[in-house]
Length: 180
Ligand SMILES: Cc1cc2nc3c(=O)[nH]c(=O)nc-3n(C[C@H](O)[C@H](O)[C@H](O)COP(=O)(O)O)c2cc1C
Image (cartoon, rainbow, N blue to C red):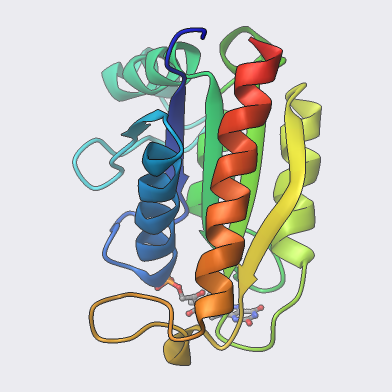
């Protein structure tokens, strides 16, 4: 038995009370149930400047974000789909990390959509993660028609979606353990 792995959650909105934030919390809980420790960056408390904005590279939050990313063994991404792709908040976070922080680690991707389920945002995050030398697991989850997807407690109305989420989380944790 190796050491306990750490999964870092990366949310596509400032607030984690959003739909994709709710999905991320559920995914991280499922990773914990599969044996991982979890951490999560909070863009509301510690916002990141836009990459390339004045003095951004010396920003304390950027350094803390990069340190957190470097300390993690795996990443769970959840983004809303905006105009057919990931949110700017998500892309900006991915733009703040390099191979030295995240290279050769394991990733999983999830998205929420106001309209019909599709794989655009998943594929775009998959591509960015590959450019960061990430190993993205094949399991993925897109939650379409998101306003109807969760009940008042934030749980999936469709139990099959919860099963898919748990399979994704278990795969993320076990794949990471195998690669350690
Ligand atoms: C600027 C913007 C663009 C959007 N573009 C799309 C889109 O291309 N496809 C879609 O299905 N939903 C689109 N939506 C709806 C969002 O995907 C949906 O509101 C979101 O997934 C809800 O999650 P959240 O609460 O985490 O933001 C868009 C919403 C905004 C604000």
